[in-house]
Image (cartoon, rainbow, N blue to C red; front, side, top):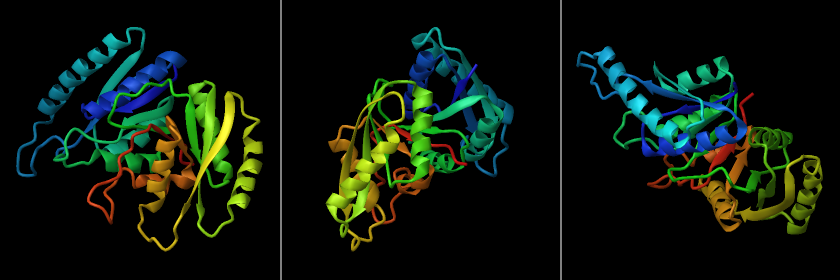
Amino acid sequence: MKKLLVPTDFSNNAYHAADYAAQLAVKQQYGVHILHCYTALSSGFSDTENIDEDSHTLKADITMKEWVEKLQNAYPTLAISYSNERGLLEEVIPQQAEQGHYEAIVMGTTGASVDKNIFWGSNTALIIGKSNIPVIAIPNIAITTNSDKVGLLTNFKPDELLTLQEFLQLYNKTIDLELIHIYDEHEDVDEVKAKLDAWIFNIRKFNHIEKIGYVISPTVKDDRDLDTIPEVIAKLVEVAKIETILVSKSRKSFFQRLFTPSISKAMALDLQTPAFFSKTI
């Protein structure tokens, strides 16, 4: 049976991700595997303490069973497996993805506590960069898989078409597609639109796409703020009411800033829309 891999730290955001994975799995007849990774530091032990690994494993097993039972009650027909693994999340998850028959990784973007020694959001960005299967990042809100309006971040690269294909194969649903393009302020807008119209020709061959449109915005080169492009994209996503955004491997660097603290700002940008990241080849 094909499965979705769902990492958990037992936080609310992780449960939102698991719930999203469960919805998708039930629709596509996949299974779900819940994985908890732990280390001495993430378990709350100091270096000077005698770490009782058996005790932590027992506690994790109990918590996991309670957590899985809650999910199973919500989705009685869903096949759920689970495991607790010692190791760093960003190392264990890619290994699991290579070994198992997983279609995608579904995970949250924030952790149980800002006081934790391992920051969940940073791990999300690391896993996106390493994973050989798609990663679906879920914000810390309840999300359904019923979204019909999908945005594809585009810069006219061939791998964007592969990303779209991966998404359509995984979700197997009819969508309305909006291309999202950020252009240089010195570019001619009519030329930009002509490029997009030509690019749409390559997309019309895909099944399950009912309508294709685009949203565009310029970026100001003189503004050297590293968050400029992600902020513009986030604004377009909000204005166009896009429900899921697709990101190809060549565009991941922009969205890594959604998960990690900004150089120029006190707070990181908040991801409010599920993001589908293509596999890293």
